[in-house]
Image (cartoon, rainbow, N blue to C red; front, side, top):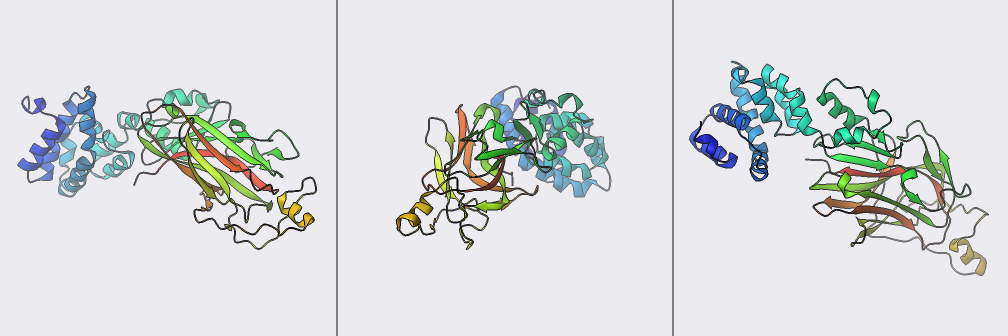
Length: 361
């Protein structure tokens, strides 16, 4: 064993797979080795993590060989927990069926503490409900943060985890966004809805200039992670002005090149035949054209248009774009703009902009 511990994890894995034909024989020394291996060196710690897919294949293969005789029960629970902490939350849950030792290890705080973000405790402390957050174990806390987003920063943001990976995700409420004219009750109003994540959300009454912008520091996001950003909204019964008019959405770091595209906020994607409703308080270009005798604007065809999708919570979301959070620090900015048409539009309720890690496959 002393000679083995002088090798790297990758070398040890290759030696095992070449030497042993039985996956059980391979898994036992590998488990003990990873338990004892000092992974303080960052480079070698990364090597250990590359074993994750191979390790769980061994676990699944060995399950069939060992269930009947319970050979895995001879492994120390701490050893098993250390091995599982190098896998993923979904792998840890599946491993519970291997043996009673695995089940106990898979539920242990030692495993789930590794799956929680390092800054998790600090983020939770920014919530008014941090002292009353109900959980009896790290696994229960993990699952709660996946299924029940936590309001932080005076209720202006919500924090949650992507269930498969444990990556940090956020939603910015309208109070955290820059929304032009939002304080003018002629154009926007604050409203409360029972299915909303925040105490108040913003309802668009009528504007001819739609501008919504949000920012978040990349330091708040999980590193080396692909994110997608979404506008989360729902239409009212008085939705108008969006059926033939796409909006421009952008995502990118402040001061750097941004990704732009056109999307529809109308669920019918420009195919609606219902007439435009124009309020008396403003006359857009659509009406000016009629008054002056010019032809009215025709419905626009946008090849790159995207359409809203219904979420599990009953709201709609439209993807604004993707962003890979690498080593560059800065502010990620997202925007939803309709500034050029000049026509009036209204009937949207905006819950916020969500920054969500792409689900692991």
